[in-house]
Image 1 (tube, rainbow, N blue to C red):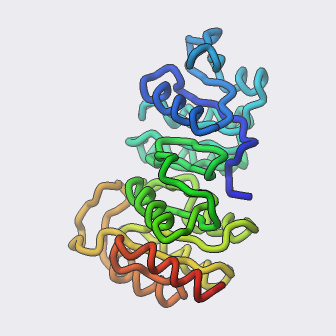
Image 2: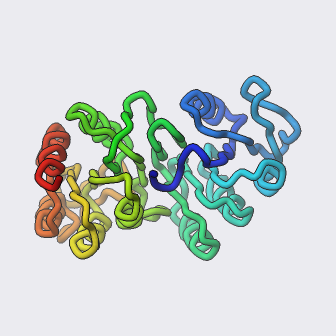
Length: 294
């Protein structure tokens, strides 16, 4: 089991003929991802990636011809929102948007549409998802993962990889690792992911990587305190940032109150989450949490 994607996901790459789409689609194919089609408007009728993957002009056409149900988007920021909307209206169930710099105004419209259509959007501005040994959607390096029973959720791209590495170093592999993105408006929240991992029988523990700014970690922690049966290990990045400092993500802005690292760490602990004080401690804290629970 896993969450969101697996070996049976039928994958479409939007923006497949661009340089990023080409590079990462090759990596995803090499990992074993079941890519069936690509979309680039105006380039339909071609085949790409050594003639293995047909290219269509529209998502609707790709769905009709190949039955794709999952999309990964490598489209420039001015066109990314429309790419998500097109996928949603074409019946794609899971959309992962890697694109950084999607305007917030565009995301307000996108969020409304994907919610109305029941589309699961991950991102934007995220590294994607890996269900280990089954499906890789995005830019995460697959070789760092090991099959196991830990779910990983992260707002930070680079720290997603660090959390995975920390798990592997203490002998704990992953079911699914998901980078949800750090923008102010994203498709799938930390709580959404916790709900999915709680329902997944194969996942026995979860790592969450949060950041300063916003309330997402707090909302997730309070939900977990009431509803989660599986142990959670947490880490909050940006502990040394002064109030008002803008970090790497558009959503990581401290305005004071509960969105500081100190406040988030305190609330996570109050909600029963085992918090690693340093990024280097994630693995050992996770292992201890799992040993105490199981």
